[in-house]
Length: 116
Image 1 (cartoon, rainbow, N blue to C red):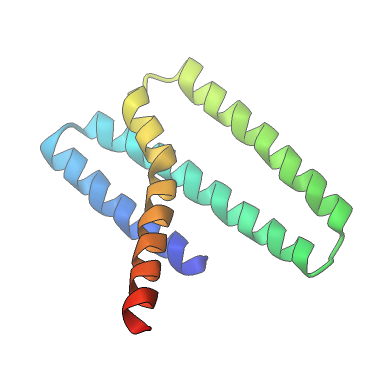
Image 2: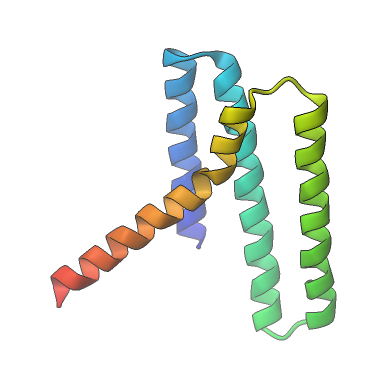
């Protein structure tokens, strides 16, 4: 999963540079904020799930995961309600990690099928 996070960060940087060059700086900033939020959220979730699977304070980690989503919801609400970020690019940034995961899964399945 660390590789997915690194690949997503590199992909995000490429998209942000492309958006800034071809579209606008505002759209690049909105995409970067959304993608950054998604990457941080995924990294924190990955850390907490690792702790749960190691059976370290399972109840505390479960509450931390639930609390993390409450905080994430509040952050997204604040960004949408109180800032002038372009919502389309912000949402595209939020789902960019899912796109990276789908692409990685497709390529890993393709390489497994070609090996065997």
